[in-house]
Amino acid sequence: MNRYIKTTLVAASFVIALPALAMAAAAPNFGGSWVRDAAKSTPVGFPTYWLTRAAPAGGGGNNEFLLEVRHEANRLSFSDPARPVRTIELDGRPYTLPMPNGLQPATVTATLLDGVVVVTRNEPYAGMPGNVAANVKETWSLSPDGKVLTIDTVRATPALTQAYHEVFSRR
Image (cartoon, rainbow, N blue to C red):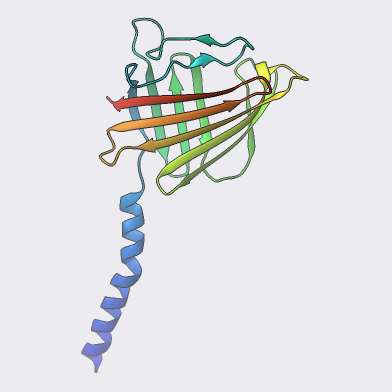
């Protein structure tokens, strides 16, 4: 009887532990150094002005565009050559972050669900007080082997909706 109980408890512990192990194994890690592939990416317009000024998808002329990402549990920190380090919480709650010019905050919500990071931002257009808002949605996903990061961005303003597709290779 004692042996039967032990066997049942061991089997039950596997049944309980396997979904948790599968979830942990399936959780992607977005951390690393990522180089934007200009050939596979669409040019990203400069979003601060009403007139979109396209920049080369590779960023910075002949320089490579390098995105540095640190992924810790429920938080992403990332930086690129054009901006300082930004940190977002992946908890699904709205919070505020300063706009690059420091004049107005943006409201940001971010989640990690089913291996995909979704970041939504509501920000004053051009970052100036009293401006209309721009709504931005970024969807981050990794290839099954974890070597390719794709960021799809949709940016909606009263005048225009823009969509960008960026592909990065892990360095």
